[in-house]
Length: 524
Image: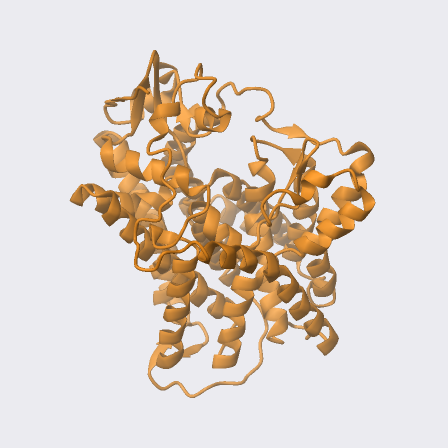
């Protein structure tokens, strides 16, 4: 992806980040939950052909990595061990496994985990006259939930969640070092720092917005990572640590897929089997990834219009077509029952009218990513992926969907991560046009300023931590089933609609694809 300097460290013992085993293991990590989902949620006559066809596509995709000779990028054994220790500490601090107090979103995460452990798969509920099926981004839950189901223990599933997520975060860190060609211990440390410090300058943006609009006092009354949540305007581009603490299920897999794409973004013939798993980990990040892939492919076509026939051959490759018609159709029909169902006013997709608050939009754009984009411009202006990310991040805040505007928070994940990788590469001095020392210093200052709020949130959380108490889970809901009724106006609207498919007889997935559904009875 990127040019780099020629310095090398002594290999010694450790591992080679340029080895094909790393991306192949990453693909295996992403596809294992997909395999579990197909085997346990769909009928055998659907599961067998989908697994065979998808497996064929994945094997062809991994063959490219096996055959490719990547440049060696050594990671010494001491640095590998230090990296694992740092990642384990971060995993502990952000609340994975319930070893330290968890964020509010974990009430929903743990409720889904309970349901996956306690209910037959596919998970379904009977609440009053309503029968519904769990329809959510369950990819990151399935392996820990399967282990918890095997042992009949929620606590075992929590421990499994810690280690499964740690494995994903380890993959992210090592793939980031590979993409950025971090071939020395110093560069690898920088990669880890950038990964955990990256985010918007939220504190400065709030101060600026408060000066412009003193009446928006509610802007500062919410969680640190919110930029604005008032007057019908909900704006947040989540820092990396916030994503890991609040929405790990929509973060780790998208990050891994973006990194695989950045390694070999010319391989259009494998775009579908590469990106499609992201749908089971998060529809909104997947939507952002689709925009990124389509935009990059069109830029490639524009640059080489004379070879458009070869381009079309790559787009309509056997891997892309077969994966779309097999796994793609199953995932589409699974989510269709939820996505295309009738929703209450206020949580569907709609345009945001800022009116007299348009300077607030400009503050958000500048302080959350614009400051990085301006500093990266001299080194990345010839890269279409830079412009795709910047334009997408500028347009996303013009839309609103969900009670808390999840559209803005989660569709932005792939684009923000690309800017993070570009920031890391620039700090390493590994771009085609190296950035000046002034630019690097300013980027480092942005990272430090961006980290203040997420680190303060973690520090405040640790004040309530009880060491060696492994029962600090945010587990107030226990099950999504208690809210699985559209008529239950006493339950939050997001719990009644975001996670469920109703009217099961009207949907192709539940009628023809899903295994026999045995809804669990839920009553207050």
